[in-house]
Structures are given as structure tokens and as C-alpha cells.
Length: 316
Image (cartoon, rainbow, N blue to C red; front, top):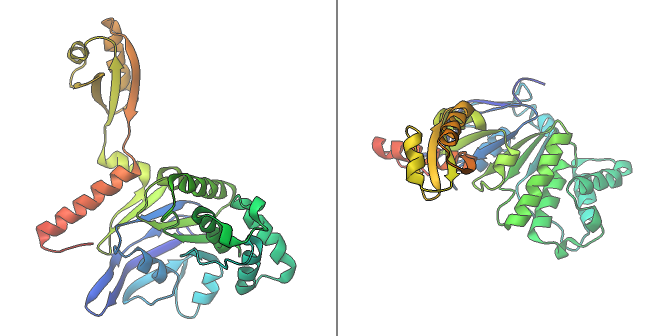
């Protein structure tokens, strides 16, 4: 497999005078989960359709599995791609029957349909409801079955479009856990198009942020966070007067329960703790306040919007 499963170059899509995707240089590495993030209307679903060859670009190129996508090879390349874009299922059929019907659409042989359906139900933690009518399923269960449907043809690349939209926190956590297990146990590459950020830290290793159809940030999550916030705020809770503790650590800020220090490395935290201990200050806890992918997302989107205001261009 090539170094990138997906590579776009200067990808653009216009509808009349409206540019929906602009100058997109997207890179997705194999065996990783990539979160394509952005507000509603940022161009995420259009980007998905361009990459899968469902619509033609106005300009630029798309390469999938190291091969440039063209009308001639699009059907062949799509055989290696699974896509979940909705939860429309047959309510009167059972979970297994739904998968068997869709497996037939994918061209799976009858001899392997039942076995593959059972494998997918196991992957998505739905084996115990295999014989239940889908109409009795919760939204979270239907969402998991829709993801399972996209997995039927054993794709090498899986696209999930807003897979956690409308799910409650517990259902979201269950779906993320199932996807995390799937990623760990296979060589599948997953691209999640979403503005729902819950659980992404656990699943995605890479992100791209779309604002107004343009990719304003892309890369490894940890590297992007470290670049934006080179120091980590460490909250140190102490017994006694926090003001006394603050005088012992240069640059410390007061908190209701102690102090907060900016640490560029673990050694900075260790020096602060050692200074407090040497002065006889009793320490209850030292807790790093690490930025999350949600912090990164909002900071990046805010930057892009401020930049667009300064330049006189409105973005979604």
C-alpha cells in the first residue's frame, strides 16, 4: 500500500459561482483514523463525494490507494471502499436480514452472506440482536448496524459521515469503542466526517479542519496540539495557603486549591513539586490540564474566522 491511502491535490468543487471545496491538499495515511472536522456547510460531505468519485471535481486531482481516480477506474476503486452516510434500514427485517440484503447489493456470494453478516454483527456488538427486527432498535443500535453494513465487503477504506449525530453520550461511547476495537484488530483506514467531537481523542490519530471549504489545519493530533500549545498547564493542589505556594515557584498562578504552572516538559513539573516539598508544603495532587482535540478544533476554527473577517471574506 502507498504511503497515503488518500491524496488530493488542489481539489476544488464549484456549483455555479459558489465554491464549496477550495484548494484541498488532503493526505490520509494507511491504518489510521482521520477526523475530517468542520462546521455544518464547511464542505465535508462534498469532499467525501469527490474522493469516492460520486461527483466530479471542478479542478484538481484525487488519488486513492496510490492510483489517480478517473471515471474509468472509479468503480474498481470503490470496491475497496465502504461508506456510511445514513441509518436508513429495513425496519421490518431483522439485523441479519438487513445485512444479507445489502450483502447481495455488494455482490457477495450467497454461500458467504450468512457467515459475513454474523462476523459484522459480532464486530459491532450486535450478535445478541441478530434476529430482532430493526424497527425495535434504538438510534445507537441502528447507527452501529449502518456502520456494519458498510463493512460487509471487507473494505480497505471506510468513510463515516456524522456517525454519532443524534446519539446520546452512552451510545456515542459504545460506537467509538466498537470502532476503536475494529481499528486495532484490522488494517482498516477510517475517515470520519463530523462536527461531533465527543470520543475523537480515543479514536482518531490525525485530523483535518475544514472551514469554508478550505483545509486550515491537518496532521497528527498530538503534534498539532504541541505546536499550538508548547507548554502544558499543571494544576498543583496543596494544603494550606495557596499564596505561600505561589511564592515558591517562579511564574506560578494562584488557583482556589493551589497553583498552576506552565510546564514545557516533565522536568519542569518535577522542579515545581520539589521546590514545594523542600519548603514543607504538602501536595494533594498534580494534574496536567492537557488540551483536547475539541480545544484544537475550536481554536483553529476561531483563527480561520478571524482571518476571514480581517480579509473581508465570510466563511461557514
